[in-house]
Each structure stands twice: as C-alpha cells, then as structure tokens.
Image 1: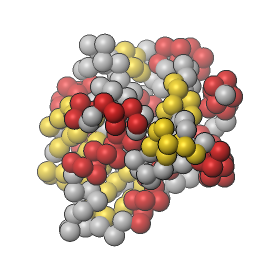
Image 2: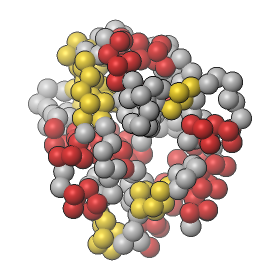
Image 3: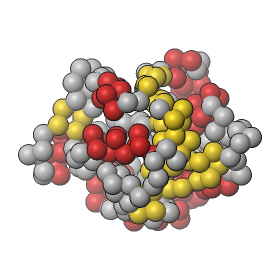
Length: 256
C-alpha cells in the first residue's frame, strides 16, 4: 500500500488528486471502519489510517474520511479549543490559502465567518492569486490561514509581507510549514531544480527549502508577534495517539 500511495502522490498533479479524492474518500472510509484511531474533525473512527509521504512514507497519518493529515487535525483542535473561530458572535473575515478539503466545506457552512479562499491552482480557490501579489485590501482580514504553502514559494519574504499587509491589526494568522526543529537555520538552494533531488533534499518535489528554528524569527522580522505553540504538549498522550498527531509539532500563531 505504501508504494501505491507514494506513486500516486508523485505522479498525479495535485488539482487532479483533489478531484479524484472526492470519489475515493467514502470508499476508503467504509473499508477501514473500526475503533482504533479517531479523526477529531468528523468524529469517525477507523481500524487504521492510511500511509502518506512523497518521500519517506509515514504510517497511520491520512484519515480515510476527511483525508486530513497530522497537521490538519492539530490545527482543528487548536481552533476549536483555543480560539473563537467557531463561536465568534461577530462575523470574522477569514482568508484561507490553498484550502484543505477537510476544512473547505465545513468552513463554507459557518455562518459566523465571511470565508474567502485563494490559490493559483487549487480548484477550491474562490480567487486565483499569487501570494506575493495579492488582490486584497490592506488590514482586511481577522484571520489568515496559510498552511504548508510558504515552503513552495521562492520569495517567501515577499509572501510573508503580503500576509502581514492583508491581516487586520490584532488579527491572527496561522502559518504552518514542514519544519526541521533540529536545524537552527533554514536551508535553501535555488540551483536545485531536479524534482527527484528536491524530494531527497527538501522532502517534496515542489518544495524549495527546509525551514529551521529561525522560521519564527523571520516572521517576527516582518512585524508579526509570534507564539510558538506546542499544542500536543497540552493533549494527553492517549489522545495524541488516538488522533494520530505528530508529537512536538509547533503551531506558529501570528498576530499583527
């Protein structure tokens, strides 16, 4: 199964994968039903989660029902338990980059948010836009979600500046990235263009860097106030295992 999923991820373009997954998801959820692992996004339980990874495959990480990964389930729990994202009585303006399928329909249905999605390629994007040159007003959004996007962007400084520009003063942004916390300094090399070499060095064929611990300080240099939230540390080990979370993953919660 690992080899099959790895082949699919590395050969089928992401926009097509998104469309295909809509058909495949209910079949997987039916075949893998059980009670060992639970997806906190929809509350459904399974005998196993699916493997995932463009390079090295990780076991029990892809939820059969929502197709969420560890980072998605962690973000959901954080938004649900630590913010007013789902409960605000005042309508929140939310901008969501490269919207994840497991969130898209749920967020669209929320009456307490004014929800806008954006991306260059995603079929789920309301607005096709370059993150380095956004067509949105200054100081416009209460919440900006931009997760696992910046590692794809050659000029991530410009992208961060745009994120800062469109966020309201006192607004909140969450900008998750794949991060190697054993690295003090982010590594990038623009001369690496071969997809196989990128996969080997950066972890995925379309990544252009590996972020280190200095990621948070780079966000601060743009102007953000950054909280490095180790949210799995607040969750019982039993639930970390049951929800298939990545222990020690840091959520970068940013304020303007």
